[in-house]
Amino acid sequence: MSFLSRLRKFPFWAWFWFLLGALYFILPLLATFEFSLSWDPAIPFKAYQRSFEDSRFWTSFIASNIFALITIFASIVLVVPTAYWIRLRLPQARRIVEFITLMPFVVPAIILVFGLIRVYSTPFTIPFTDIVFMQPLTQFKLGTNILVIAGYMVLAMPYMYRSVDTGMRTVDILTLTEAAQSLGANWFVIITRVILPNIRSALLSGALLTFAIVVGEVILASFLGVTAFGPYLFLLGQHRAYEPAALSFVSFLLTWFAMGLIQLVTGGQGQAAGAH
Amino acid sequence: MAQTIVNSKSNKATTNWKVWLGVVPFFLFALLFLFLPSLRLVTASFTAPDGSFTLDNIRQLFTVPVIVNAYKLSIQISAVTAIGGGIFGFLLAYSVTVGGLPKSLRSVLITFSGVASNFAGVPLAFAFVATLGRQGFITHILRDYFGMDVYAAGFNLYSFAGLSLVYMYFQFPLMVLIMAPALDGLKREWREAAENLGASTTQYWLRVAMPVLLPSILGAMILLFGNAFGAYATAYALTGGRIGIVTIQIGAQIRGDVLYNPGLGYAMAIGMVVIMAISLAGYSWLQAKTERWLK
Image 1 (cartoon, rainbow over the protein chains, first blue to last red):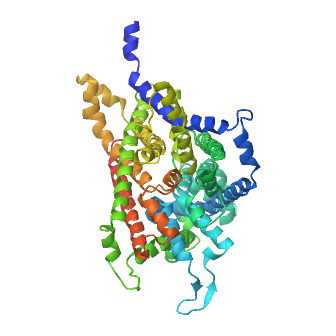
Image 2: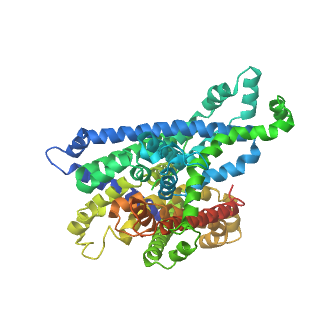
Image 3: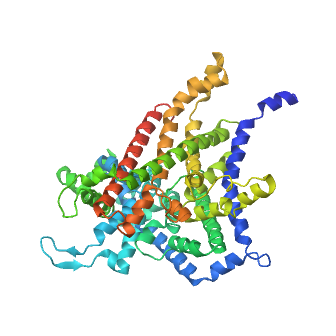
């Protein structure tokens, strides 16, 4: 092949767009990293040191991770039996459940938190009386924690449901259930010992997406007044310069870690969440 | 047949309603934490301060300047980043699928897109401050090596243009994730058939590929529109609430009744839900059209 014809085959525009995209991806990360190192030339990682020395960082970061774990656990408990039951016995409910799992796209986090505050900031009374049997959820710590986790479950629902449902499509739920039943297993054993292990890569990908959504989330946590990493990072940015850059870079690495793992377990089918 | 084995324990009449018990927890959860909060906003937006029914709040959505401007700004910023991000994302997806780049770059781009479309909110805003803020990395490079002072030229990261650039960071990767599978669906036979009939590359793209891809491109752009429209944290972290898009105004209303009319705040939230619902419906409709060709 002559040089000229090879040149004509060379996909110039494809490379052009690809490199432009690569620059758009990388430059902000490079800039953040460079800025985070520029605090003190003598101690390059000073911003990171300072960030990790702050006890409020650890309190909020650990709190967010605990929220993420509880959200993942509660979402699996809620979504897996539902998706399983629909595949096995209730295909007529598929459309309505799928519709509900899409609702969080219509009700963004800022609207969701607005509604949650509106509903759960009034005390619960016994219907038709004025007798209060429970304080408003927004008034005590356990209550706000419940609201935040429920909100996270709503935000993660589209991704969790879709992951689990896709996972169940590839295994023969019916045969597995019959085999387990004929061996005398009850529903709890079927779901925890037979179904869950068979959809573990789907579960892991749903869990990691949920993790990516919850750990950096700001809206629900800050409006419900809960200690979490997102609001902490935001407040830090109000009066600090270098530490926020360092922590932003760290949270990019975390997102990268979660998404990279998803690529590994699903074999390259990227998914996008939306907690913007 | 298999179905009857599982069903054999109980007779048909009782299963009809008992079988629904399995999804009760899910419906109960959705009712308590999704539908009840949304419905309460709907009823509150039709309620006057004295508790009576009113359409006044909805009417004021179209007349109060602050609100009209907020919707205008949100729609503009979402449209600009959906179209810009859509075109750029499409070209990127094109370059790694049918554009002739090495296969390995494809998985690199898809992974990166997965990360970037999820990297948003506060850290994203801070990353762009470090990049294009007054003391930003690129701002310095442009000034010191290219003699271009972007801030003197009128650019401002904390404005419409700046926020659009930031939104693009999660917009075009989402487009890549949606379009790459769609571009894979273009069949090699179509191109060969077109070439055999004497079509040029341009003719192939305009007459064959584009008509097939168009619903999917438009659908994805509508999804990007909704994606930007619902965004709050990125804009708030970047501008500290100084840019009056709808989500920021709603956030201010939650913190304290800045509109001096709670009902109007609820109406504003409902207006947003309506726009999000329309864009999701548009997306699903176009997606269904796409599936006829691209499987």
